[in-house]
Length: 429
Ligand code: SDX
Image (tube, rainbow, N blue to C red; front, side):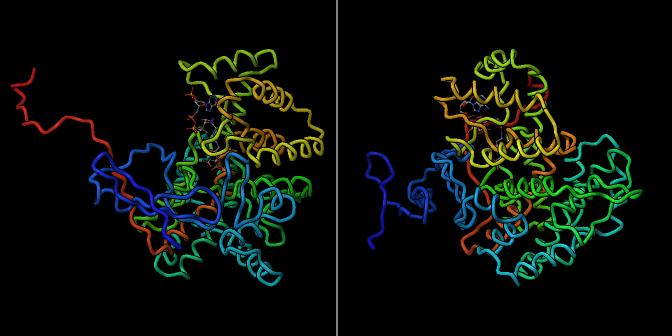
């Protein structure tokens, strides 16, 4: 088929560059030879119009509000699959058959304990340390405990490191919480599902049996699915960039956790709860919206807007439905839910938000559910990181195995001083 090309360049006659098509989404212009042929760079801060890689894992259509994982719509996975099955899909490209699923669940379940010495690591933190700070530190330190799965050129070691990260995240995350409240660490239980065990690690105490509430464990499992992967978002791009230098997988995931922590990204779920708390009452919504619209005020409506979605985030829809289920099950009448729904209703009819296509994103309702389930606000982004670990390792693996991948090294538009001679101290004013 004749190769599609596009001509780039000024009046001196453009240079033709190949245009590549994927299975879904926009075509891309292959500009790998642009600098060599035109002596020019492209300029795209934040990469709003740049495809950084080829990927087969997740596809988002922001205009239509579509999210596919290996072709499967997120709402179907959230409704009919479970988190470990979705992990298998993201890692391997296909849903597992019965035998494959049993083996994967067994392998993950039997790697959920951490090296006992890792428990000492927590004691170096202040009790009031933010759990995300602990996560960055502890996950980064895993390469000091599991250096037998850090050879990124060995497919077996890549798989072992990926399984260890997915399996141990709930234990590491829950211990960050237990440490902050001075309770003893709980050990994983192999008789529980992934989501059930995380709730047990978080809320059980050694003194009495812990009763799993199936509605809450199902909601937890669904929340993990909704956060599993999301194309080349900031933290995933961070993991890919760190991995492109050959850094070990534990260090790459620690870098991803650090990036996710930002309030513009994964930290938004914590910021939404703080924002709703600040707004306090429905009568204060107009003031909050006025601030969000004021270009001179850096206040943003947290949980609203998205770089890609210019329609309702499909994850937010599932999250809102789950929110009602959990609050009903717990008999919780959270005024913040009413406030959030009123805020959404008013914002979605406000021209500022409508014109800019700003809709609720995955973070808008998640915090309300997690708070109702007993998680402190500071743990919300930790749960996001726990869930996103499978997406990060799947994308990291895809990058390592991509024959065209190179170390990430963008260029720049330099606008600083041109060359000048050094000025001795006694000559400076
Ligand atoms: C996640 O990338 C991913 O896939 C991320 C994620 C994932 O799963 O990995 O989906 C998870 O990070 C979700 C997003 C969580 N962040 C928030 O909820 C924080 C609040 N949202 C904004 O910070 C913002 O919407 C971003 C950061 C999410 C997106 O920023 P963009 O695409 O760079 O948007 P922009 O800054 O170009 O905004 C366009 C316009 C601007 O106004 P104008 O300059 O055109 O006048 O919309 C305005 C912005 O000021 N705007 C908002 C707004 N978001 C954008 N105004 C008020 N409140 C907001 N929330």
